[in-house]
Image (cartoon, rainbow, N blue to C red; front, top):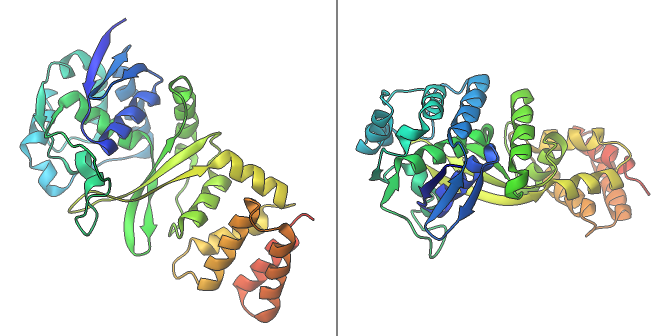
Length: 321
């Protein structure tokens, strides 16, 4: 079996590389400075090419204007005989059909923003203290970073007023990676759109539990793109535990779906945000079901003319006692 060495770049970039390798269930060993992959690495690129084709991803929005004109991008695309204006589908399909070429492309300056996205947010402060960042990267590493990004991209939406890409990385073993990737592909192809606004992480966690039927915990990354790529936020969601808690707490999920619908719209009220947190705590059994029901009915009676408070009432009445 063919073995290929893939150099590490930075913590976030390495997470994407790992995700790309999971995407087709390739066996690999991880070391301090590299991954050693066993099998046909071209399979990863072919699988991601098929996904971006179905999702109609026509541009590399993860690349900034400076990235696209950089020597790094010219070297990466040039190694495959492609233009710097290449589409994701074309890049990944070409890489999938030329894995032996990629391994001979050598190293380039690690200047692309996505390769160092976790180091800066808007305040230009390091997000991960003690993180190491390599000044150079293998062309293969760069391509796998991009494959991991587009392979596990759930969609694009807003957090407050800022647009972000949402990545979902299942926290599973290597042997479970391919199964998770196949399930994820089916989900994102059928998923019409993300909510208008993600709201608080607890709110979006409940939305994921209701809409993304993966049987694992997931790491959520919110990625800001544009003039610079940065990790705007990341958090972990145990989808299995949340779904179980929802099933145990409610006789019907319809009222909860309505609540999350208004909680992920623009201009969410503080009352709705606070009630969602109460629901989340009840699902996780840090608040009793009785307290949720009583407080929901109390909210509703205080402002019966407000639609959102009537939804609080529906949620309260759906609580199992």
